[in-house]
Image (tube, rainbow, N blue to C red; front, side, top):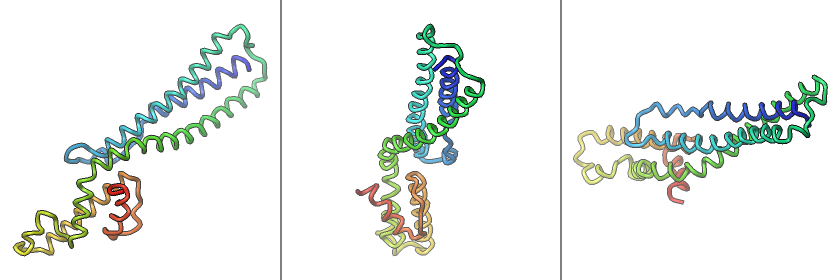
Length: 198
């Protein structure tokens, strides 16, 4: 190993780490308005925190390679190989860096999920229970159930309640990265049950 090789490898690793840390993760739902805390912001913050630590560590590894090259400067030759060798090292480092980004991103998403999942479940418990109640009670909300016989247009209210329950379910599915494979509300809620009641 010579200085040129060490410099090339450390620059690619450092650049990769900095690039990923500086290009934040985009969650489009952050632009929507919510009552209380935006659950998508909770998820984004946990993902960014984990990813920042992972890719900052990658950047620190690159920095340590540079520090090692400086400390052992006297024992390391300046340039031992041809230009083609260094082009190959650089291209190989880019490929390895790309693979590292993919692996660290997958690992980071898994680690982040372990952190954001309990927080998301806690923050969405109320709307899950509301959607479940509406589904189990023929479209009625809890507060309407006792006075349902006095409601002027019960079909309109029940339809509006079902739409609300559907929106709640859709929001939870997006947060939990679940693809709804049906439009049936009760089946969708059954899929969510393990998160909220398991």
